[in-house]
Image (cartoon, rainbow over all chains, first blue to last red; front, side, top):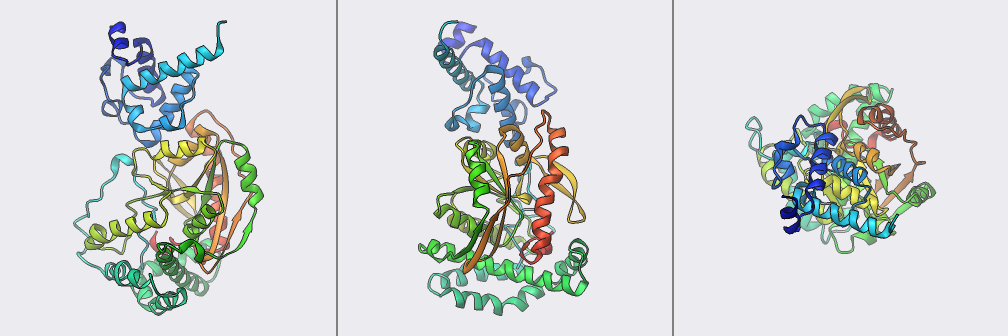
Length: 102
Length: 321
């Protein structure tokens, strides 16, 4: 499954799982990760209003140690689990590359 | 005239509903005044000099007073209590607030002119060092203000001086004096004009609202917020001596972005206005929303209350609360 997701250009399953968990925790939702399919639009699965979106953004940044580029701060990206996963993977990869080997 | 842009009843995104309630009358006097404003007066404002536009405004004062007589009667004891003044003085404040609201609404028409920026005459800009030191932190600045009459012209002026601010507003504010016609046709038209007068804005109904604010702050920019214009979850707090359900979304953004908050006071009219920036507010950082708000919200409200009590005739909402 992980490979399939990667092949679709949508990031890794591990990242998706972590994002789902962050979504639930940061918004204090009474849901389980399994309640979201990988195709889910997060705002359809559980309300993602304007203010909750930034709570979610900052929680993702903290979880993955990344910073969203300002132009990427859009509700379209935040609601699309696959797109978001791909973006987070891209940012974490870039961060790792810039940090170099340990 | 009521204030369609008065945004006390800011709605959370999920509850946005522009459908007119059936209990409203079809047309009210307030609707007719807005109809005059949005069409013949707006067209005249393209060519009339400012003084004659203000003269029209002054002439319409008695009609505005008549239209707002009930809300004014309710406001007088409140003003007397909040400003610790006599009922007679409170009555004058309520009347002056109505008049100022109407004149600044006419200023809005001047801002629609291509030469609108040149008509803005700033007579004083105090505390700019407070704004500059807040900008220097690099995390963006929220300009916190009460819903005062001169805010919009002041923001236009600041933009011309290299300090553009994203203006947060409510697209569907409550105007208790309007009818179904006003809500259905006139308020959307007025909203369009407000956007033309100040394109650098975001409405709290925009699903991207908070993220757009965050974007502006992260690039070190300014966001202008009238304290009654926030979306998000309400918390009841005392404000000007009455309980008020403050929408706290914007303060969540302050917590999460660590931006600076600078109180801004704008007074006057397009023919002569002053802007004052107060020192950046000290903010107690807190990990949770609840502790952050309990530590800081009274501070945010207190500074706006002080601005209003010092300049009660400039506050637009006494008569539309």
